[in-house]
Length: 520
Image 1 (cartoon, one colour):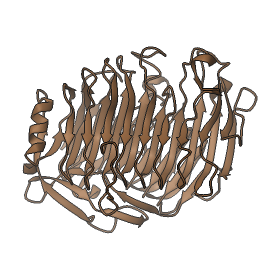
Image 2 (image 1 turned 30 degrees about the vertical axis):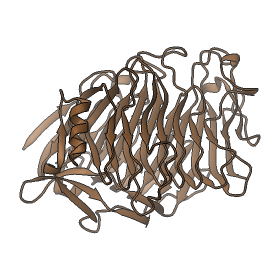
Image 3 (image 1 turned 120 degrees about the vertical axis):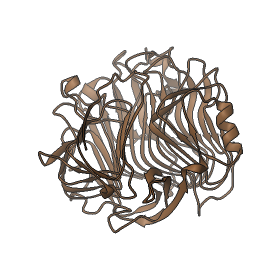
């Protein structure tokens, strides 16, 4: 079978696409555009072979890949004709469970601001090019070349040599605890199932290179397949019957909250399925129960302010889920950028032991429905639960603290942030007597927290005189430790005075980049 797709769509369009390939071999050139997911339907990536490219280009923007968002490639093996595939992306564009029989180029000659690879094997070399930052987790390759500001490798087989900041590599030998993203597949009898990978601890490399992965298969009969026209009431009725959810590619307006209350529920979106809460409701809540998996969704704020877009566990949650945590995979949040949106908080995590596995939490800074008094949004991520772990946490442009961490035992592996571009003046962006808001705030009451590979950037283009006192604000206690931090004043437009508390920096028009290896 042969086919060709060229899918280059506007980043504000309403269409959503999933290109799904049953086990077999295909001659395909797939140029993956906005709101498009390409995935194999085998139990192993090697069950589906693409003889051709599975790639992302930035030629539509003169090589600038900084707007290449909202797409993904999963569960395929690829034989690129030239020997090299290009994945020139920025945020919300995961490359998961892929086997590339060749090299992987991560840019297209211009700027790029990714990115995320997980559970993947690249037989050749990964070339990061202009990528500002990147997280690779549980991957393997022949070699890696390239760096810019913040390259993080967690549980990677054969990470590159060198230490932050020259080159800016952060290596963590093993991934302490993770569950890979659930995925749709077709079994040998031709039946559709969703595979839920098992929880792994202290892992290195992929789940599948040594054979079929550990985990559980759930037949499609145990899913409510959400299609255009289904309402929040339909979805909640299905959940009440004990069904899981499979969202087909579409945009879904919600007049009520989707309430996930049963332990081990799987909520899986295909093709960047998008939830828009209407009339200020919360899009989704998850009860304080074991083992819920939410994956592959874009939650897009509506024009009426929501107090929050998603809540994991109600306020005051305290149950331990250490043996079977809830996990979020490729879950993206957007406030403005496609249309006017407003939300005070985007994601609030109250449950303990939650795992975040690639989140982009974004207050829009360009395109449609953006402005200091237009797409209002205070905080991106608020963590109140204990022992929460985040891999690949991207939080950008919120008007107060981007990330607020109140729980103990938190861990973050890779953090990427841009402060809001658009404070009109310093008086509009003050935290009491402090200039601006730290991007990542660990509460004064916290006694244990650790983070690796963090970058925060400013570009105060509305008023370059605006100053952020610091990028990271944490209590001075031995149990709170930060490793390998970078701040950048992009083009020297604006100032971040200190990296963390009153240490490190500045980043400003005279010195754009500042680094700090450890704090304290």
